[in-house]
Length: 129
Image (tube, rainbow, N blue to C red; front, top):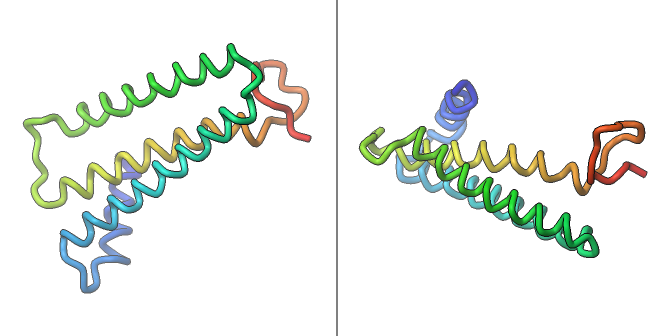
């Protein structure tokens, strides 16, 4: 909630000069689309890097599909169908989606970036070189 409030203040501080709510909504949606594109890119890279590990590929696909369902369910909890925040609703929705997507990107990047040697609980994550 604090992050959302921070984003709203930040957007209003830096972007509100000369912008109407439709433009703010559009900018927030563009931010989300950019994050979603990055997420898809990271996911595809992971599939490529681990392509020889059939079990991992099966499991990461399952995890990603479940995360998408989780994301959608979280969005419904945050903004139920009978809830309306007026003209800022699209912006709020996009900001929340962006935040969740960026968290997922950080989670998935570990499989690409690797972790420090010596972490005995690293599981299938690569070791940093």
